[in-house]
Length: 362
Image (tube, rainbow, N blue to C red):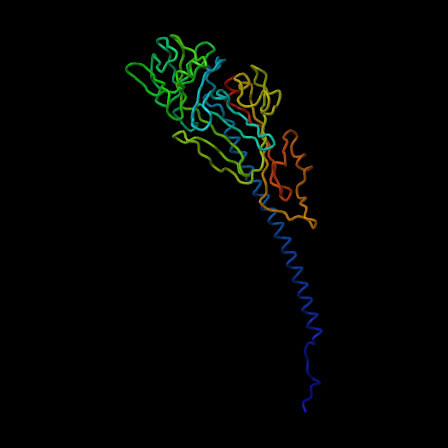
C-alpha cells in the first residue's frame, strides 16, 4: 500500500480563493484602464475642439481684417443713390444688396449667424487697380454703350461704376472697342449685371452726361462663412464666377456676430448691434459706412460623447453653463442637436477691426 501522508498541494478551497483574488484584481485593473481611457478621450476631444475652433476663428479673422479691399476708393464716397442689378441664376434678379458693405452679418435667428466679406477683386490678385476714365459724350437712357475718353484697364467681364454727383450706376462690360473708345454693356449672360431696357426704365435708371466719372474693376469677390451640419463652411467664387463650398472646420456648432458701429464720420466704435431691424441685411449705404468692426463668438464641440448618468440624463454641459459663456452672445441650445448636453465645448470670442475702412477714413 502507498503512503500518501507526504503528498503536498492546493486544496480546492485554496484554488477558488486564488481565482477569486485574481478576478477581483483583474476587475480593478480594467476599471482603472477604462477610467484612464475615458479621461484620455475626453482630453483628446477637448484638444480637437480647441484646434477646430482656433482654426475656424483664425480663418475668419484673417478675411475680416482685409474686408473692403478696393472699397476704400474715395470716388465711391459720394454714392448716395446706387443703381445696380444682378441675375446670377440662383437668387431672384434685382438690385445688389450691401454693395458698399465690406462685411455683413446674416442673422440666423435661433441658429448660427453667417458672415460675408466683400472685396472689389480677388485679394490674391497682385495686379488689381482701378482704371479711371470719363464719358466724352452724354449717354442716352436706356443705353448699352458708353463713349469714353479711354478704355485702358477696362476688360470684358469687368464691372464699371459710372459716377456723377451723388448718383452711381453699376454695369458690366461685355465688349471693348479700343479704337472707337466705346464700352458695351449689353444685357444677358450669366451672371449678368446689365438689366434690360424695360427694367432700367421701370426702375428710373439715370442717364449720365459728358464728364461723368467711370471706374473699371474686376467682378465683386465675396467670401461667406456659415455653419452647416456642425461644420464651418466657406463659400467663394472660382475663376469662372461659380460659387464653391469648402469645409473649413468640423465640430463648429454655433456662431454669433455683431456690428461695431461708429457715429457717422467717426472711426470710433460706440455701440454693438445685432444684424436685425435697421441693421438687417441689406445694409443701407449710410449704415454700411458706420460699421468699423465685427465681434464674433464661436462654439466648438468636443468629438467625445459623454455617457448619461444612471437615470439616462446627460449633465456634462448644462443650460446654466452655456448662459455664462459670453457677456453678449446668446447661444440658443434649442437649435442644437438633442444630445448637446452629452458633450463638452470650447467657446471663442474676438473683435476684428475693418482696417481698410478705418484707414480709408470712410
